[in-house]
Amino acid sequence: MVNERNTTRACSSCGQHTGPSGLRQLVVREWTCECGVTHDRDINAARNILRLGCEPPSAGTRYPSPSPPSQQANALRGRISEDDG
Ligand SMILES: [Zn+2]
Image: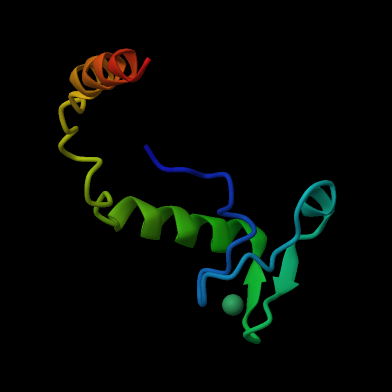
């Protein structure tokens, strides 16, 4: 699943979110990034989507780790606090 939320704002050249946002985004078709590259809004968004789709998923998301044994730890803490009283 590709996150398209920032694809119209993110510069496909340098990655900064310098593009038009909100209502301006609807009327601005071209914008120039701080890095000096002028983008067509739709083409820039398409480039970002392509790039995001090609990136491998970040480490840790591919193999969900088993839930930590927090219940055991809580049970242990409960016993300790009881002994304090
Ligand atoms: Zn840029």
